[in-house]
Length: 301
Image (tube, rainbow, N blue to C red; front, side, top):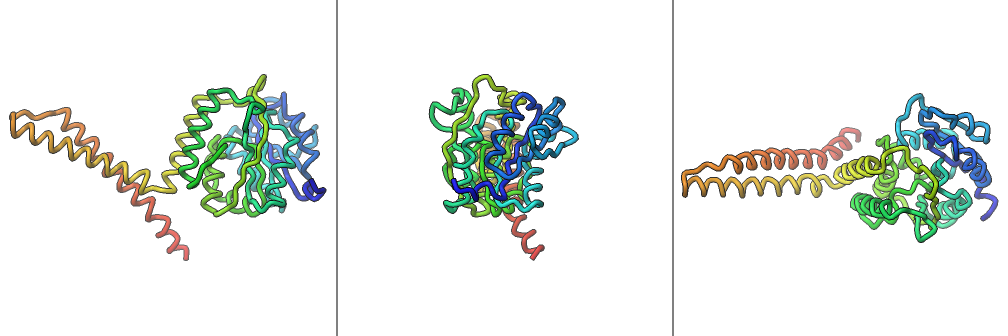
């Protein structure tokens, strides 16, 4: 890669209790960027001290706020200090810093705004259960982007300044859903996103400080909400309308049974109430989410 690739480039490493690996990650990453910024997200170990000794700039959160919050802090720092290119890489050692030039090349020279690390092949070392969970989250994120997403959860990425300026103000989540949120907001902003093949290490690494099942469900629930925000009529109002129809079906059936046998079906009546209330409420929420952005935009204009 051209020497220019190390000019005005920053690597952001969100960390929470990564004292065992952070030093090595920083030393390897420094070879390819101007500055390494570690965002210490309330670690209780020696992450902060080791990061400083390894030559990184460090911003510390007083308490653990989540990976999304750490990424937002890093993006704000990059914008305030006028960096042209940003790399995000995890601090647990699962990503190979030697692949940073490949990620940067796509946003520097190939006309793309965001370069996503795509963990592919046997070199990814990804366990089967992670592959299945990742695919579910990929499909969910795809619903929000309007296209097929190959690796929505990889935190190894590169951004140009245009992308950071567009995405950073729109990031709201604090947890691990930040990767899906970035892609949805990138699509919303009309940014060009490309996949870059990378390897990934999992053996002998503790790659998450959170229970995997809890982690997956929290990301999935937030990603589904993000998708619903993008298409509220399709993902909120339409299911609500279907629930109203189901309630109507049970209502008609209940009336028919009463007219024929003079028996009032209490379980059906309860279902009518539940489906009708939830359905009407969902239709209302979907319509509100669909119209409010336009109303707010007209007010601002």
